[in-house]
Image (cartoon, rainbow, N blue to C red; front, side, top):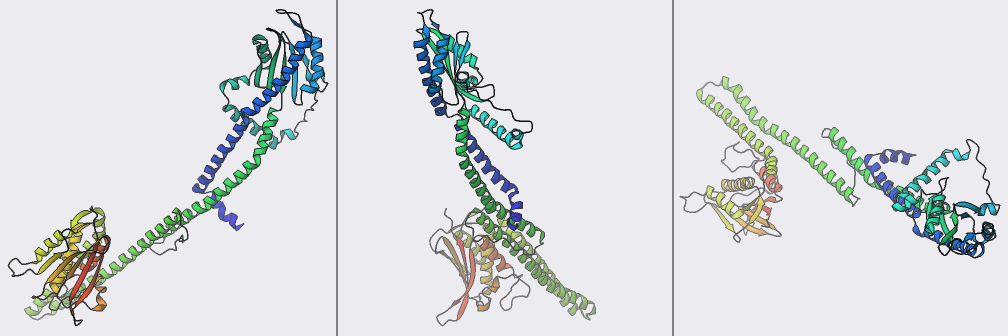
Length: 533
């Protein structure tokens, strides 16, 4: 009962119904084709016609030899002798479900094997509301009628027309043409009759006809259908089983994913358990894993937005608190010097807030800018040489920033403006931390695999080992001694990592050491996928 309750809503989904109906339609076409082939199997009709023709020709030849007299063009047939021949031979050459009819010119029926043999079947009519009128019998008759019409669709035009001819038409045609008439026609009850009419003739004169009718064609077809029926039932069961299996394997997981998506939408950011499809190796499993990854990425994005909002609130709160304190103390200041210092604090914090808001705005728009802009082919040698030239004083005896490239061309595919922002930020930081007599060196190399590597080294104090990863966090600041407090928002390296990651690359920091293991500077390494162009 529990399985039935689970399958009931599943089987009546649109996808499940489509799978089942598609399989059943294909099976119906197959079954209809099988019945149509059985219905129109020419070998069955041809074999019956050949058998009836052979029997009719035997009787026609015997009647011609024993009951036809006179010379052409006016031979006559002795009707009594012909009847006697038919009576004596009907037991030998008129099998069950077959009827022989003898016609004289006119045409006039002069003998009937059923009447001669005295074996006229008496079939009592069923009483009113008998079994013949039950729904099962009516359905069976309706199905039989449908199969007949389906079979007739595939018949040639002349054979469909021949079904409507009568015995009289067939006999008249035999008298007029002097040729045998064969085919399938309907009897007055609607059943099909295989009929053969052979002219009895001496030379060219037709003195009579012998007609053989077989009434077992429908029975033979029904037997073939009955023989096919077990295979049809097995095929129907197999098709239904496979349709249910496909429904369970496809419609059920899709429905679970749809319900999970609905729960995610209504959860308001709360994490919702997602269907586990790790064990599936097909397209449904791929879709489930992609859905899980997409949803987890969405959750991570929401968590990052919440954390970013909290960090922003914290960073803005500090200068606001400073401004409020200075504003509260300002009316109490006794001299102009103290007032000037308080005003300087307020102006400094206002600039700090303005800088924070600008950097926060740039960071929040970064993903959208990267998604909208088209990728470009960028030569790192040209890009970094131009950035270095902005840092070098043309009047200085030696350049402060030196670019060294391994080879001539180092091409990547990316967004030029965001990548320029990354390298500008890294080079400016290196210049800031390096002493006046120190320098900054930029090395462009080919990394392992299809990658380009840029190393930016300075001669500064280095980075504490515990902060080699922390420096990429938002709002983290560590400035050299003597630098003004609040002059940086702490978003530069966080934005740089965001840009590099969006390009499929990596960025990390390390320290340079001398032979004695002392730190002699910092090194930032950026790895970007190389362009194939």
